[in-house]
Length: 205
Image (tube, rainbow, N blue to C red; front, top):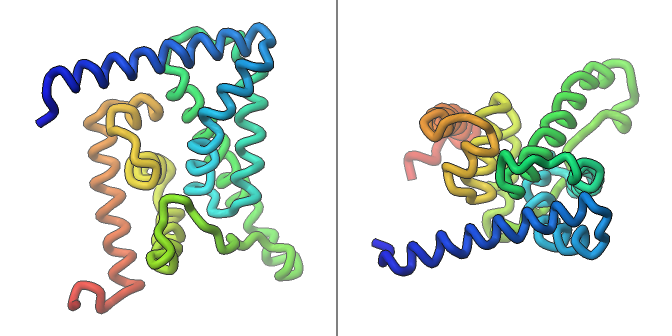
């Protein structure tokens, strides 16, 4: 159990962080290049890691980082403060990643009309949250995560890959906490079935 004093201190630190992010974003909206660099330094890694979890391709994840921060720079002046800055940035990231995945799906029919070398195929990638000894198993898991519906995929990636608190995931997805828990339960059940097919003997060990 967290001591009350520590809990209050954590909440205060979180509030101060949100307020500082808001001040930075306001400054970005006024053309402050230093504020933009500070915001980039704070969120570049979370944006990249999230994009990598979705796209499973390092180059694509880097492109998402660029697109997200261009979007931030272009829209900072319009930010109304209806959500925390980090929530807003994660939403931009998630939406851009889902757009890329939908585009890949729409274009997948091209595989039947093009040379095999031109078709999209996920490359080997290293996610910072995966230990080297778990790399092979993690790549199988990431591949199976791609088969989940978008909402289950988002809940799973943000909760289990990025390690965000459930309430923050709910805020990013603009759904209730209960809805996030339900998405995670359905997602885990689906992943478990598909992992059992991939590793038929894994539960016998």
